[in-house]
Image (tube, rainbow, N blue to C red; front, side, top):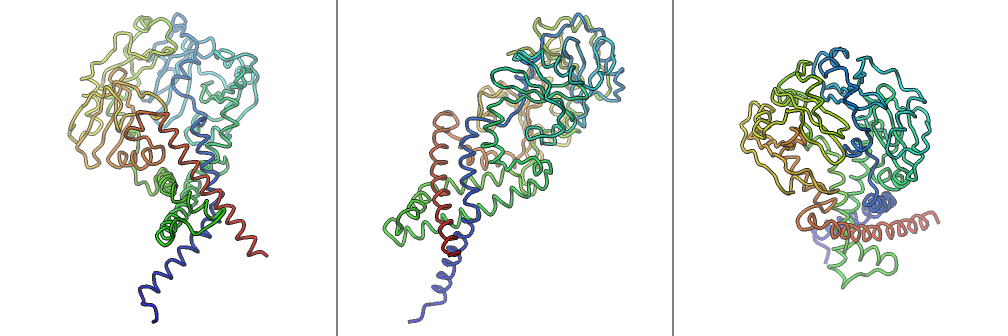
Length: 479
């Protein structure tokens, strides 16, 4: 009897599924293998970044007795028309300086003794600044850098160009100092530089000429991961078709390894690739994670380049402070003193949590504040998969259409993040699926990392065996 139209359609679909998986696998097999190897490396070595704790630890103690200008006088000397997004008093080598970051990200620095701007950084000047770093041993200027593998992203643009300086320490640390201001913007170690070529650079397709063009890089990653996802889904479907038709597997050798490992780890392969694809925020599906300029201005409640505290008030900063940050929160001045292991308000400017909440209300004036919650322990939306998050924090939830939340530091008033309904969905679509940071696993990092390792090993078996099978298929066709 001739086959029914439905059976013929199913047979044709299976054939196309098989052919699609075969050629998609041949096209992306090496990419899959590289992703799983590089992902395992990234569990151990992160991409180079200068954390705030590292920045504080790298600074020498602040010489307040050498400061001659108040914050307001420094802004006047710099010719600012608005209060900067960040204003910091810290040492620049042996001289105190005011460091200013504009709303658009531009940086400038003026002497806290004279108010004069600093000249462009020379090789000798870069070595002198680097010599104050606690890890400095035998300092050597390595020349100018405009953009390289570790400073490729646009967030470094306002500070370019740099001078790269080696500290000569056992870790092989290199510093990137802004030529315009002398600001330390990045540090890298030898281990980070070596392992990241195998890790993040490979995993994120982070080649400098490509990553420097953000739009093109995003398109390339989305297309590559999208094609890989199609190959993974088709393979997972084929694996179960074969399982239902046969007892366990009809294959032998590499094909059996590919089939069985795909059945055991195929779902993890699909979710890893899907969540990685979603992490690129295709078509802007997920909302921003930081407040915009209007929100920050409303939260500050003061835009003019004014600050009422004089030198006598600044002299009350705790001993050992390495930096003082000046800000406006809800129209009130705030000074925060930073030292290794300690960041807290000082100089008589501490704000009550109620004042921070009141300032936060202004960020979304058209919406009502639904709740203001003090978070004392990590939860599903306030966490840090790399360590312990800052606690306590204030969570402000608004009733706007996007259901926006802000997390604020009740002590310093810092806006820690912004998330809306789509961002909270992305928390589950990326962190829960890609890094398994959810549920009991989030509370047991060794177990979570171990499970990621096991699933990655399965994925490596799937992709590695697929590469062998694909190579054999190509050789047969060539023959």
